[in-house]
Amino acid sequence: MSFRPPKGTDDIGAPASTRWRDVLRQWDTWADRFGYPLVMTPIFESTDLFERGVGEDTEVVTKQMYTFTDRGGRSLTLRPEGTAGVVRAFLDSGARGPWKGAYSGPMFRHERPQAGRRRQFWQLGVEYLDVDGPAADAEVIELGYRFLSAVDVPGLEVVINSLGDTVCRPGYVSTLRSYLEAKRDVLCDDSVSIIDVNPLRVLDCTVCAPVLTDAPAMKDHLCQPCAAHYGLVKKSLENLRIPFREDARLVRGLDYYTRTAFEYIATQLDAAQNAVGGGGRYDGLAESIGGRRAPGVGFALGVDRIVLASGEDVGPQVDVYLVSETGPEDALIAASVLRLAGLRVDFDSEGRKVEAQFKTAGRLGARAVVVQKGQGDEVDVRIDEEREQMALEAVPAWLGTRL
Ligand code: AMP
Image 1 (cartoon, rainbow, N blue to C red):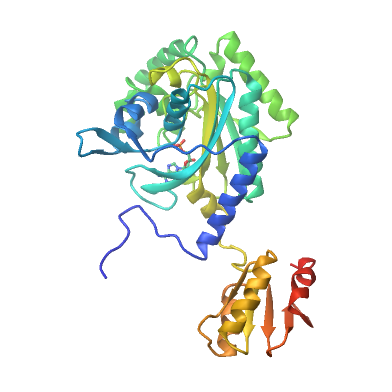
Image 2: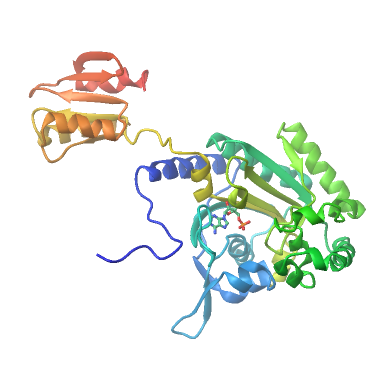
């Protein structure tokens, strides 16, 4: 067979997928705990939703979208991110007042592929809409932080900034543009090409970083309401004991952010892909896609990078491996009893030799092995150094305290 997954995409199976499943499960738990119901939107949307929502001058829109014309002549795009679609769905539903939604699914961007930078990748995210206050921003940042801590992202760091709003940002952007014009000669070609259209993004350029150390910072140009908002977000994070670092150069790649912007960094990954997630406030997004004013805040986390950051240790694929000396028909029944009691169980349906079954138990990392010896109900249970004989029905309770 000569087919391979398309460039920049992956087949993900065990053992790596065991970690994926764990991350996705924990995501459901944490999103639920913070009051975010699931929201599911189409994987493709009208191309202009992303052009207007993400921003026509952004790299995502100009270079990375998978756009196609369907049989009805409509221009559609595989979603490169989740926020525009969720905000569209919210506006479309006619809902009003504080509204929460959590999503999880694949996104598509035509990137130059490398580790942690894929053309199809998986994002987890939340959107909190029709909310103005800084407590909403802090709650959203907290959810991401608690979840990433729970899935053991090592060296986790929260970085925040304020990008101002339509009152104070234009003045700052023109100050920044003049500063960058004066530095034209020492900036990389990519940066020079965006001084006019998107000067904020120049701050993001790792190549130019060394010559931009004295660049004007948005936080020194905030209007009073933006400064007050930013101050309260930081105060809340301190109250929640969430460690954070301020970075005046954090601008985020998508155009729609206003005021709070933040990223979660896994400091142990390479700098090029160490952002495991990011987000911010986007008070103007709903209007830019043709809706009413609906201020909001949200984030997106990249599962590919979370899995990459958290290393090889994926944990066992099953709790119990059932080794049968009497054949697969008996093992099937015994496995069923243990599964109905809530254990994760596997067995060999092919009736292979006992040694081969033990080998499989080891490969799957089974915490316990249950050996079925005769036709009766008695089994031999082995976990670590312990070994006990007992009735099959007693196994779940006995293992319950040991697994
Ligand atoms: P963004 O939507 O660009 O703000 O990205 C949010 C998060 O999604 C990033 O911090 C990454 O973890 C993840 N992400 C974005 N683009 C990619 C990609 N091409 N491949 C893998 N993960 C990505």
